[in-house]
Length: 386
Image (tube, rainbow, N blue to C red; front, side, top):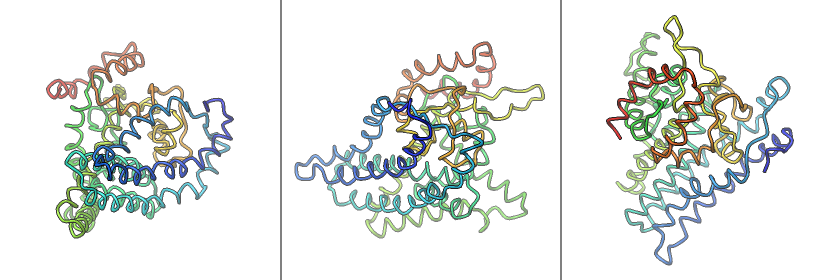
């Protein structure tokens, strides 16, 4: 629908598209909270936002089509990077998200949900948290200004996933698309095997990386200098506030939405690098990271919804780039749908492999021996987990 729109016009559309998307999506939350209370169907409405994101948005993605805007590297990227509106909008989302989080806890307590409704509401709020708290947290932890970097940490603390702040920047971005990176899924590895490995490994690796960093600085690991201690302390302080407001059920909600937010992140991690690998050079080191080591998706609606996270190839090539100037690489491996569509597909490993394995094989035609060699260790894990 929008693929033939003039790129300069599309850049203007996207400028208002980021806030407009969230002004459209967030009102669905009170709708899904209030609907069904009189008829006793509130348990089903608790799932509505989740099915909106992973049912309606994938359909709209294909109807709306792809994003025609690719800012010119020399003429547009420098000035667009300096526009403060984009920066302040991400910071404005911090209080908006905390409002959603605490309001979600209130609804969890007053809506007389059964276990089915409670699960749906935690999943719905957690999914919104995955998109706002973790996705925008990801955007901000890559930035140098302290207000942005700390806002990213606060976002992640609100979903009890502060380890991502350390592991993603110092671990994933260094070892991406290698067997050493638990956030890079291997060829033929199913989602659930990936999750069983990624969750514990990324948590432990974050603490290891922070400990190594502090030791190099001559500082104690267990001290005020360990940023993970501070961020996780904020998470448990928030859990304490939820306990003070609503008792143990409030704590259940807080950690429940945290789990589902982290789950959304790790499923997206699975999608972003599936089967892609960095070749081993003659000196035994991995080749440098290029746009070839991430799957790209250029669907307009999910590009706007996710602050262009889908232009992941450019993000890994230039990690500090702001979301508004991320570029699409047509030569990068391309996903057949937006992240919302691919999320649903990933939940069904046989279907995922049927769709994605031929794409991986076509991309690495002529060097499948290295593909299998780099994937062997994790594929063994996959064989035992599925």
